[in-house]
Length: 403
Image (cartoon, rainbow, N blue to C red; front, side, top):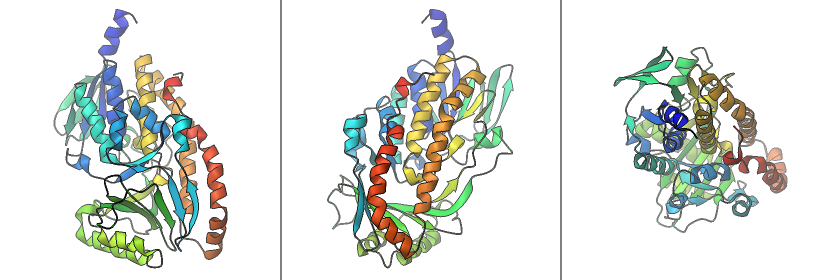
């Protein structure tokens, strides 16, 4: 690389809106290559530590391994193996994740979202990065080939690019595409909590996934003795946010969950009863955007293509996005080429995984006894086929990608 090219690269200025997984991962990759990065985040530092857990699969973990000391994610986690049960407590299938270690170099796990964010943000600080918390994007303008970005705290001037990594309620998306359709509530609610139960502290070998009579429930005990659980159920009315701060909503959701699982294995009700500080996340479907970018501004992660949680690919897709976009920013100079190439490399893969998540989500909906009987009979065969079908997802290697 010539000295001139190094100089040009090191003088690129990138504003990243959102310090979650996608934004922090992108910032690290750009900082490593000498790009000047500013990150703004609407939430406070304390709010960034909130939230539940998520699944992260080999394709995401392999990106993460290039950014942080990957051994630290095992300080508190649940193995990625899933065991499926019907409402009578009978195991009907297992998706063993242990094979992934040999196949992809690392096996999927469940981990707290905040743990990933914290590790990424520690790396940011180590690289000299900085996050401006409680900083809200208000507007931006392209002035003589540079972006001026107005926030509630100050105006940031002379940026080459702005990247919207600010999630499903993205302010960047609203500014960029004011006529774009909003996220659509799917009338399904994902709830959950983290709880310490005295008689349930032995680490689990797998996440137990229960097709209850009226709702779906998953739970496991971590290597530190906490029980992590989540639930998906039909909910006509979208709850007010944030549920964790509203005692009346907390009580209503807890009562709904106990009613929904009253005919399921008793340990589910025991876990719900022991839980406080429930989280509830409405599950949205994001209408596809024709373009993820305009001019010098581009969306990534959930801001561009929110995905329902049913395949556990949200965090992994965000990490993939960050790695691919970083490569495009480094390789190309013109914004149109940077962003069009990024979307070209990502859109088909993302669309296929989103379609898969929708299909799995429908399988969790309340059904009749005949459908349940058929599911119990064929699920183990279906899962064995799915392991082969998921190879193209898990085998994705950003480092081999020709941008």
